Amino acid sequence: MYKRQGDGILFSTPLGSKAYNFSLNGPVIEENISCFIMNPIAPFQGEAVKYVFSKDVVVDLKIKDAKVPVYLNADGQRELKLKEGDGLKIKLIENVVSFLLP
Image (cartoon, rainbow, N blue to C red; front, side, top):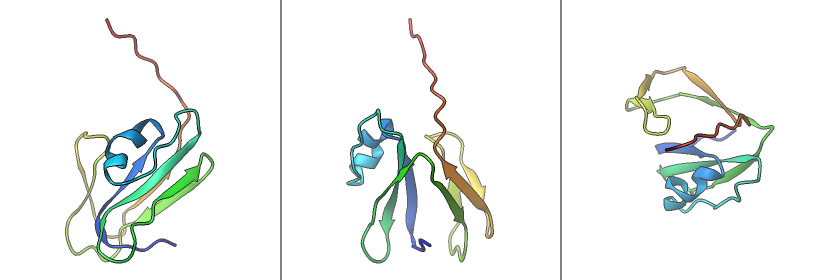
């Protein structure tokens, strides 16, 4: 169990590991590795332990003892306000989408 207080938790794929995750002193992961990263944002206590999970791991999060509003923000999209007792499951989906830009 991982119980921490802080400003947030960042989850990143290897592709995203070179962006916001890197600015939080997170690891840079080669893009061909099937994994994801959990990196705390400004934790209030203890060390900022960063985790690299294999593709088969599912991370269950539950909002407990929130003293301030909690929001889910996925890649800069619209925020979703979460409430006490809400939960999230974070897992790697290996569906790849390619875009052809003009």
